[in-house]
Amino acid sequence: ERGVFEDLVHDLRETLRLLQGRAAQPSAAIYDARTLQSSPESGERAGYDGAKRRKGSKVHMAVDTLGHLLALLVTPANEQERSQVGELSQAVQAVTNQRVEIAYVDQGYTGSEAEQAAAQEGIALCVVKLEEAKRGFVLLPRRWVVERSFAWMARFRRLARDYERLTETLKGFHWLAFSILLLPKVLDGLRSAS
Image (tube, rainbow, N blue to C red; front, top):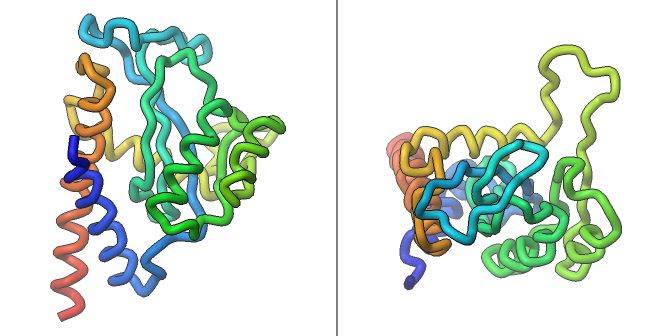
C-alpha cells in the first residue's frame, strides 16, 4: 500500500540510466497492454478480450526506451487501450517530473481521443504501424522494447495468470518483479564503474 516496490523500481531505473550515461528521466516512453488469463480469484475484474480471445485482466504498461517500468494500470480485459492513455500518461509524467515528450504506441492507440488525452499531459503519440505486406516476423521500431518487458514478466510464474483478488496486489507483484530484474543490472553497472 505504501508503494515501496514502486519507489524502489524508480530509484533503480534512474540509477541504471545514470550509470549508462543517460539522463535520469527519459524523454520517450512506449505504451502497450497484455491480457492475463483470469482465474476464479479474478472475480468481477475479469473481462473478455475479443482480439486475444481470452477472459482476464489487462495490464497496461509504460516503459522507457530501455524497457524499464514507468507506470502500470490494471483493467478488465474488455477495456480498450486508447481509453487508458490519459491515466497512463498522467502517471508517466508524475514519475518523470514532466520529462516525457513522446510515446510510441501500436495501432490499438489510434484515434483523436487517445491523442488528445496524451496531449493534455504534454505527450505526443507516435503510432508505429505494421507493414501492410507482412511476410514472417517484422521487428517494429521502438515497439519491441515493451514486448521484451512483457517477456521479462513471463519469467515470473505468479504473473503468468491473474491469480489475485485485488488489483493492487497484481500491480504490486509487477513492481516487485521489476525490482528483482533491475537490481542485478544496477549491481553489475556499479561493479563495472568502479
